[in-house]
Length: 157
Image 1 (cartoon, rainbow, N blue to C red):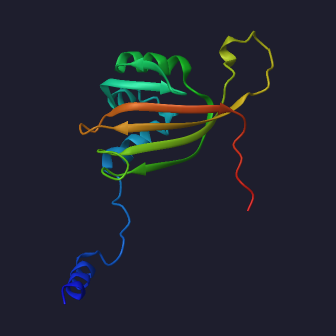
Image 2 (image 1 turned 90 degrees about the vertical axis):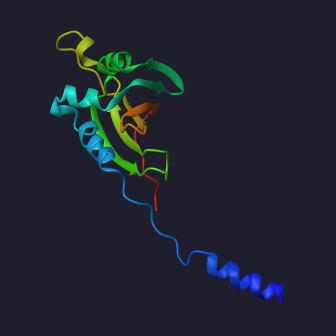
Image 3 (image 1 turned 120 degrees about the horizontal axis):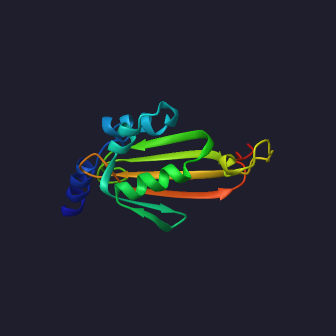
């Protein structure tokens, strides 16, 4: 008699259906709009997204620690001719404790500002994913960039 009652109790305790995750927090969505619109020139808005103790990594190597160092590094190495392929936002508790933003883009690795006047260079396309990790203060505490040379290709059906 105990076994059938145990099965009934477990069946009643289990959720009936799975639910989709909650939508991302508004601050993640607001940050996405600023990060995906670099031409807006909102330097103060851009800087306000990052925590004072932000750490930035490129291909697994630490490239900047602290907001001032990150902003300086980003300004010197910002992607040229970037084309966002897509992005994904996650809510707190689903990917991290306070939300995440993942951006996938292609860009030209050639810094044309350093070429002689009138010099023509073919683009050197690269593909990058950038993962922004938010903290409980709604600021970005980690930036993890991974990139590789080459064009973005979609698999064939």
